Image (cartoon, rainbow, N blue to C red; front, side, top):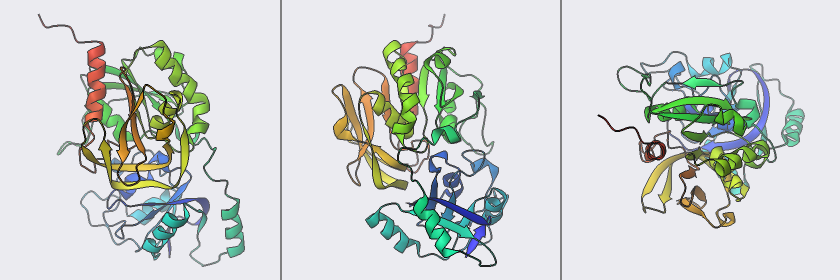
Length: 368
């Protein structure tokens, strides 16, 4: 049975294993061009609220769930999930055997699908099948340009804290330029909480655009689509930052993949990707296993990394690359999302490491 908006959409179908955070997932810009199957059956039970949006509107094309959403029962609820989706033009379907669907995706790869909702039940099945078959897919597609900001802006909101909500960063110590390939708001909050004054620039920002802000560090955000396609314009900028400055550089997700490309590595399309929480990732430097959140359909080929680039993190599910660093330089990135808190703070040290690298490069003056 359908709920949310009416209409039709086509996309790549993936599955997400997280037990919480459906609103954050639907508004994560990294899900552009995808419909999300939720493996956890209870979706919609806490409703929605504007504080949990990771961007202005849902970016995922639609959602598939096992059970129709029940009435929300959470004190933070502002709008039921179905109404929230309808108001934002996103289609959903309930009553699906999502475990069986997930097994099919795992065994056969992420398919191209059509999703339609008509309360009257009028569906042209042949046309829907044809629409799904004609979907071009995500390989070779630059989606970052579709979800990036239109112009630069400042960000000073920090991580949520009881009982005040999101406090403001009023005494930043480091100036950071964050390049927005589809940045989640909570990543920007983590940067602000680590003591950063954050200026967000569009995905097409050039080296000169970045240096005009005289940053202490450069952050490369998450985002959707094929990193090789976005890298056509992003990789030259990243190489200029690496070649012409000694600035600390930190990347997450798509930012990680494009940093790898800039350093001479390669990326590959995964069969069904990694989407969800509780993904175990091993830190090769320390031996620590972190419980992480992931959302990616492309991956860095760890075997393609050149000399001088160290593989720092690997997935314990399939051994795929989850992190790199440049030897003898404060330049690193991770595939997983340290801001998403499934651990709940297993990977937050990465933001603190970024702040420490900026402080070491330009130490604060000694007190009199």
